[in-house]
Length: 262
Length: 329
Image 1 (cartoon, rainbow over the protein chains, first blue to last red):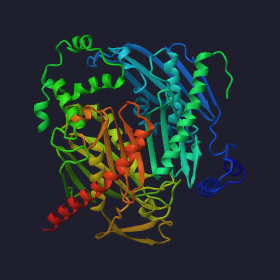
Image 2 (image 1 turned 90 degrees about the horizontal axis):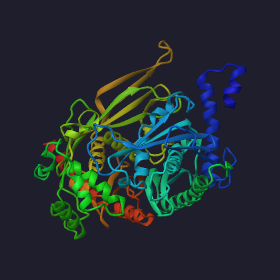
Image 3 (image 1 turned 60 degrees about the vertical axis):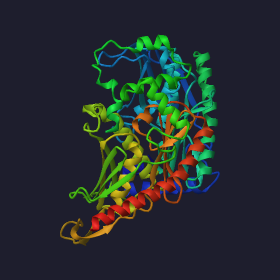
Image 4 (image 1 turned 45 degrees about the horizontal axis):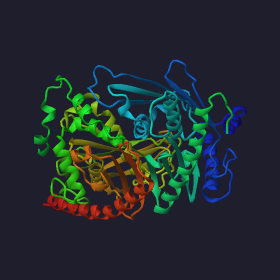
């Protein structure tokens, strides 16, 4: 942003501004990768999550809905159903879970960039299906629609956590609430709940979806090169954060009127 | 071929009144959700209760339906250079699963954000010739899942660390010209373990790939735009030592198996695909199947996958050497 502001009074070609921005980013990246206690751009330490604000019932037409705001990332999830499956679907003696994730065109810095994340719908489905008691609503479908209003990093984990809150709000039977947290690996440091800038520089990433009460991992994805020890540490870090996030979800479900953020 | 005689149920006309109504009242699904999911997957493969029991029992006794042990692979055959128009290509057969991978290199322009890097795109297509359910949009979900799984394993982190393909090696002139690598996978015949087969095919296809040598001449007449002359005789071999293999461990009951057939996959509760490079480092992981897993089970699966991957490397290398020998003759 500051590079853009500097460019406002004196015109400089885009390429030059781009290289300046890159230099600045490189410097930040170096600090994150090498210094153990360097505060992150938003003042957090490496293992601090962003403050989580979650709320149930933003949309009235849905059976259940939830809104989540983690720093800049803002997500809204609506749950419809259980309702009759489409006629074209084959008979099924278990329920269906239909998940769809979409981005607003203005969610990302470059317009329409969020549309690239097509795999998110499938990944949301995989993270949730192990938790939902599908046999409690045979022949019917539960629709989970997620909309990312603003993308500020760690989008998918926040969508998953928000969707499980929305499912609970809709009264869909579940074995446990699913919460999800991701970490980014930068140099020798592992940082939790990365922002989109940090995600853009990451050497590797790991996302865990976890059912804290059942102590089961429903989804785990990993990119980049990792050693065994690092995986174990990162997964444990995520599971710990998931348990804490689950507490917040439970608070919200018990007392939706209180809107205090943590 | 083998699956033909097991697919009895699928030959039934689909308009018959659904029998599961009676089944569900006779045997209500037990507590766990895996059971209910299994019931849904069976509708695709069409196994009788006896067959399911046979497959699960065999896996528990370390003797699978086709006579393999739990951590044993099917026979692997490799062919290289099967697509003349591509820069590199390979066909990999694992039992009845057959996949083709092709690598095409085209000159392109690097993005403004990464002027010092080439681009790689990975896309998988499932042909309806492999299975009728891949027709139309039916394969979209599976194609996307496989493509994302491969991208996650091959492209490394956003900064390029841990990537199988070194993107900066694809640069021709910084900021002006680079190679765009298009890696396409095609599922010709599907009998389980598609991700592992595709990763193996891509690894072999990349070893087969020759990038044309280019001569760059910078002159001032064309506004600083480099003139690129592509040689059609000299090729540069691609360094594929860093390209990982993917090992998918499918969990059936309490045990995990490698190289599952589609019948075995229908009985799985969950599967973990781990990509391991030749140094034994993990460079990608995806969990499939919805059932939750205990963290300690996942860590155990990772270490098993690491051990198994070394055997798969030797298996793939000997198959590749055999293919090269055939090609040389």
